[in-house]
Amino acid sequence: GAGVSQTPSNKVTEKGKYVELRCDPISGHTALYWYRQSLGQGPEFLIYFQGTGAADDSGLPNDRFFAVRPEGSVSTLKIQRTERGDSAVYLCASSPAGVAGGNEQFFGPGTRLTVL
Amino acid sequence: DQQVKQNSPSLSVQEGRISILNCDYTNSMFDYFLWYKKYPAEGPTFLISISSIKDKNEDGRFTVFLNKSAKHLSLHIVPSQPGDSAVYFCAASGGGSNYKLTFGKGTLLTVNP
Image (cartoon, rainbow over all chains, first blue to last red; front, side, top):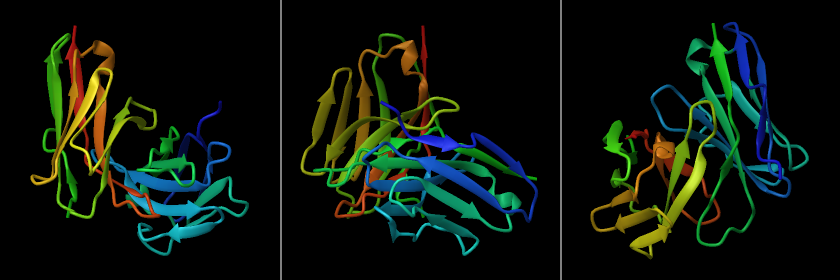
């Protein structure tokens, strides 16, 4: 079956521009996560969706970052007025609802964002 | 402050030997721990996990040990194979209804033939 897919795989933009990153989770997975991985670091949590609603957006660094999941499947991470410090790999993950005993999240390949 | 720490950025072992990757955590609310493996240009892939009510979980060549009193876990790979060469991330979850993961910085494992 298809895994988590993310588009584009690479995005180069200029400082101040707006970007959208897309995530297609595994079919039927109700939980969706966005993480950001900077060079030499582990992935850092940004936002968690359960269905259509953002259950936890505490990891979003500031109000330039916003994410939506209008139909409970595909999600888009939106970054306004990009800054050089936003350059990182943005990872999306999904998992089934109600996983007993823990949370195995399935990750996509990521989108590498470079802000010049 | 880093709640999940992997203090060894890299580890090199010979094929056939044991690889031991270590992880420490500070948040006592964490109740589920996972190891992920990552190849370049790919997303992390789930490897093995352990609940805080257990102290050991084994899956084939991979075993994870949890010492709650020391807030320490380790991943043992026996025997190590060249295909195991990758970055290994330790991650922790606080459980409940929000399973967001907190990751360490990773350890690059190189298994030499």
